[in-house]
Image 1: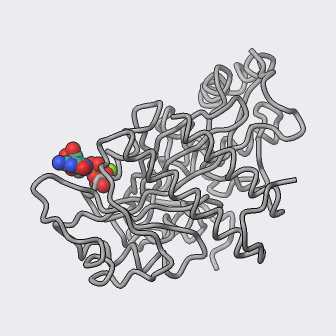
Image 2: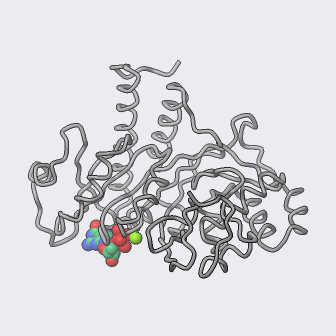
Image 3: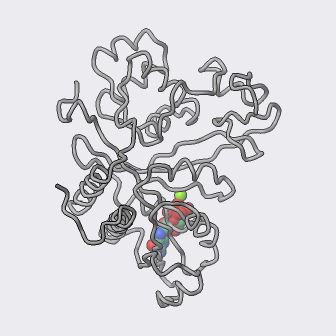
Amino acid sequence: MDYAGYDRERGIVSAKIVIAGGFGVGKTTLVGAVSEITPLTTEALLTTAGAGIDDRSKVPGKETTTVAMDFGRITMAEDLILYLFGTPGQTRFWFMWDELVRGAVGAVVLVDTRRITDAFAPLDYFERQNLPYLVALNCFEGARTYEVDEVREALAIPPDVPLLMTDARRRDAVKETLIEVVEHAMRALREEYGRGSPTPVA
Amino acid sequence: MEPPHGDPRGALVRPYAVTRGRTEPSRHIALEAVLTASERAVAEARFAGHDKYRIAQICQSAPQSLAEIAAYTRLPLGVARVIVADMVGEGLLTLHSAAPAQRYEERMELLERVLSGLRRL
Ligand SMILES: Nc1nc2c(ncn2[C@@H]2O[C@H](COP(=O)(O)OP(=O)(O)O)[C@@H](O)[C@H]2O)c(=O)[nH]1
Ligand SMILES: [Mg+2]
């Protein structure tokens, strides 16, 4: 079958949102809560030096290791697909993060309030990127419930970065979180172009 | 800088054997870039080797991203990228949305479409 459902000039467009955070914060759970497919895993081969053999810095004789990224998919229209990519657990593979964030709509930094310091490295990373992101507190049961303001202060989250609560297992909560990311990205885009108020697209 | 076409040795040889040792794709393909294969392309890919035929089949029933192709074929991402880039060059796959939107209006329209797609979830 050929695809009749898209404009041949423009083709099928895809967008992606990055889900970042430390190991076990609920990234895969969050992706699975809204994805139409069971989260898939893609593996990239790396040398142990941390350089990608994909980016030609091959080191003959060095051992290779794999970095796994999982992701999900939401087909929004015949010509529009949204992908959700979870970052690899090991934060030392920063260059894989660079590939993930390139061209992304925005990012969610998931935080487990029981292990708040795990969020330092991902937050540092996104502060240095030119990508709209927000911070979402994943509400594990039995977790000490911090005030949102306490978390903002403890993690030194800048005032213009949205901070909200979510539940990675609940589809409606995840949906709201992703909506916030896109709305935040729209605000950032308007600002980038110096268009203060919501401008209807002509 | 390493020479771009230096031969990978040792542990690197096996995964890249299917690309005859090439680790550089002929064009960059983003993880989320979507690919499709026409019925004619799938028929042609039948004679292009096992991996290419599988990839063409995967992209025939529904558009698939590079990430999905790598996951379904269990090929490492870098290997899948080399093969997929070649297939695009050979006309076996159509690469969609190769260039990300640059203009304000285009970028805003994409965000608006994603937003309404999420609201419909
Ligand atoms: N109680 C509770 N458990 C969760 C929540 N999110 C994830 N989990 C569990 O935490 C573990 C790690 O989640 P996972 O999504 O694999 O984390 P990842 O390493 O960030 O991908 C799994 O056993 C999940 O079932 C949550 O919101 N509440
Ligand atoms: Mg995971």
